[in-house]
Structure formats: C-alpha cells, structure tokens
Image (cartoon, rainbow over all chains, first blue to last red; front, side):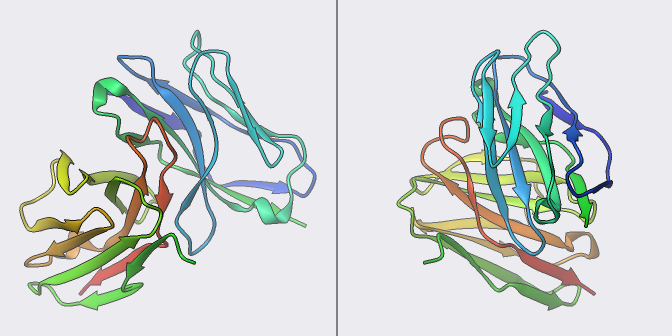
Length: 113
Length: 114
C-alpha cells in the first residue's frame, strides 16, 4: 500500500540556520502531498500542500516541491526561528486509497536561540 | 471559537473499563475522522465518516466503536480498555476527502490505561 517515509529526528538547529526535512513516498496513483505541523500540546495544522508534479507549496517561509521523478517532497526553510520548534509530518492522499491521509512518522525539530 | 473540540483532554482509567471520547466540529464539514498517535508520534487513521456514514474502517479492534449522531459529531467509544490503548486520540474534520481540503484537528485526548 501507499506509504510515506521521513528522515529521523530529532533535528536540532540554531536560530537562522537552514532547514531541510526529507520526505519520500510510495503510491500506486497520483497522490496529493502535504506537510502538517504539530506544536506542543496541540493538534496538527496544515502547513503547505502540492497536488501535482512540479507544484511548489509554500507558507510561513517553508517550501516543498512535488518531485515525481524522485517521489520526494522535502521541506525547506531558509532561516528557522525558535517558534518553528514542533513536529513536522509529511503526508499523502491518494484517491486509489479512498482519499484518506497517510502520514509519515513525524520529525521533531528543536530550534535553539 | 474552537473549530474541532474534543473532550476530555485527559483520560486516565484502569484496564477493563469502558470509556468514551466526544468530538464536535463547527466548521460545517461533511467528513470526520479519528486518528491514533502512539508514543513515537506515529499517526494512524482509525475511522472516517462522511455525512454520518462510515467510509473508512481500518483494522481496529471491535472494542472501538465510533458513533456519528449527526455530521457535526463523531464520538469514539472503547470497551474493555487494554494497556496498549494508551495513546493520544485526535479527531479531525474536512470538507470532502482528505485530498480535496485540509484536515482540521482537535487538540487531542491523551488516554492512559493503567
């Protein structure tokens, strides 16, 4: 079945460092791809999404590009802040799988001042 | 206004008990979900309802029974609780399937079974 794999955490960075969180997927169809973020003690929130190959999703300085040839959707941010500390989830939704959202295992990010 | 609200926030109970978690959304969405997040933060879908009809039922033990009295509510009842049921349970809603519109999550219910 469909699946999502993220780089292992935790990731610890200093403020203003460059962030990359790797995400790759396997899918039988043509999925939509998402990044969700979970701040401590809260539910998940959509960060960005891309629905077709070469689409770039962006929000709050974060970006990810849907790469069909490498089945990847890596999350990047040029300069992280302490307030970006959270758990980041890559996810896909595939119509062939009933449209449900399948999550990666999550990557914890900790940004130090 | 809270968009997706779950109660209770914390639930501590003993093995063998029966408990319920309630969820309500005021977004007017037609689809609601229950997800389970384990201690390693891994999220797995349990159930999905569309307009009160069950559309996704993953391999969840029969002890878990969702109930949707109307499209704004999706409650989760758990019978004969086991230690392995300890987790954070998230309710979510969307308009249409997850690929069409983003999921809006509640803040979770942390269930601890002792």
